[in-house]
Length: 249
Image (cartoon, rainbow, N blue to C red; front, side, top):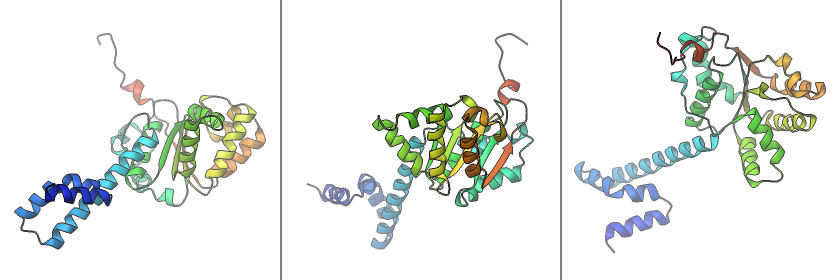
């Protein structure tokens, strides 16, 4: 066994696999730069730390289950006059997650609610937060099947351990009392432990139509609205303004 192979095996046994795989390059760079032993060791440890952080972000992006990846920078403020550049910058600073604030993004379909929620979620992951994205329909299904499927149990564990939970399209479906009860218990568990982003095409005062039970609606709103910023995205649908046509103009 060569000295290099032996060193790589030792690094892997110490769980420094990224450094082990990249070791030939690190050694060559150290040789070209006439690096000291201390400098070489520092560069090796920096590389290991960098790769671990990158892999953690990749893992958390996968766990977040975003339907697509869109950054905040791709959000077109020119198409959304109801949100200023200063307000968007404040949102991207993510101090509201530290303060356990919730966001409610309101507006008709196509104005960018989901895009903005995903962009903030991706930004949060890159800053070390754990984020989960779910549509309301998917969330209700996961809650109802938690006791019987391991997949749902794993999913709910990640939701409860998240720093930011994004629930998309709140008014997608009406709930029966059992479903509303499950949803309330989740909101209650997340309260004071995580921030929530909710997207909806209807204002909170209309959510009773979805949840059915007035007492449950009041209890859910009480927890969500305790610390909340409501953002109205009221411009025309971006998708409709920029739609393509099969006919010639």
